[in-house]
Length: 178
Image 1: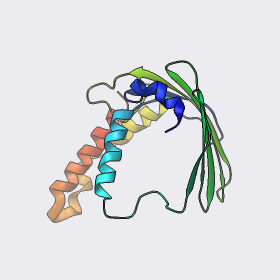
Image 2: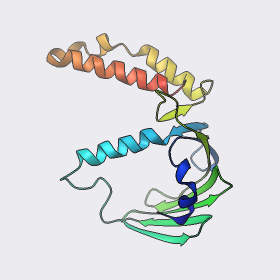
Image 3: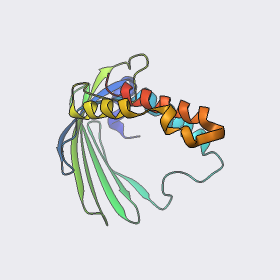
Image 4: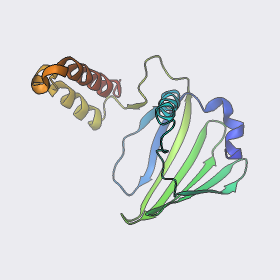
């Protein structure tokens, strides 16, 4: 673990506002991430993959290039892609992150600011978008069109499971925009 996180131990859990400051992949909405949910998902995935191969590419090499109390640079070199992540602390609650990636699909660069907002709310989705954003309007429109009974009509023996998965998907989509 980079040293810059050691002073931020109390802030690793909770929710973070993520502002994309620069990106070569187009406009990205402001979002909030609940790291508690991310940690639970990662633990569940680790539990599922015990005894099987790791989900990350074992041929990738990870190196910590810079490690100070206020800045860290990590490099991941894989067969088809090299990614460099630079993180700089901006006070007690904020961090600036720059990601530069090169590979067969071309270069990708993004600059983001993570700001700790406090504890996650009860029932908060892992990723939450601005409820008034274009993305949330599209999500709500798509969720309104999803009819579990119609979409699972041909499921036959596992129709109840199919309908439950559809209802869960709709709930998860709408939870992103609260």
